[in-house]
Length: 104
Image 1: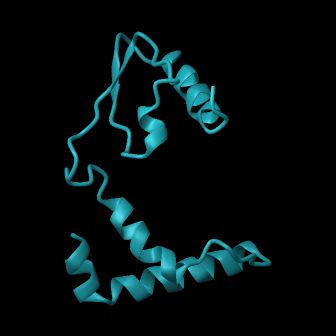
Image 2 (image 1 turned 180 degrees about the vertical axis):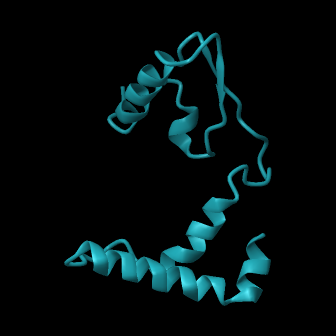
C-alpha cells in the first residue's frame, strides 16, 4: 500500500468502528481518494461527486482566502501570537466585502 494512504486507511478503520449500520463519505477529488489500493469497510460508501460540482464544504473557500494572510510556514513564539495573527487574518477578510461576495 502506498505510504500516503496509510493515515487515511487508519482513520477509515477507526471511524468504521463507531458507525452504526452504514455511513457515506464524500471525499475530495485528490488522487489518493480514488486509489484502488484503498479498502473501504463494508459499512461505508464513498460518494464521488461529478467533476465541476460545487464544494460541499463552503468554509474551505474561506480558509483558502485566509491562507495567504496567515502563512502556515512560520513559527510564532507564543499562543497569543498565533491567536493575534489568526485574528488579523480573519479581520482582513471580514472587512473585504468584495472578496467575501466572490467566495459565497
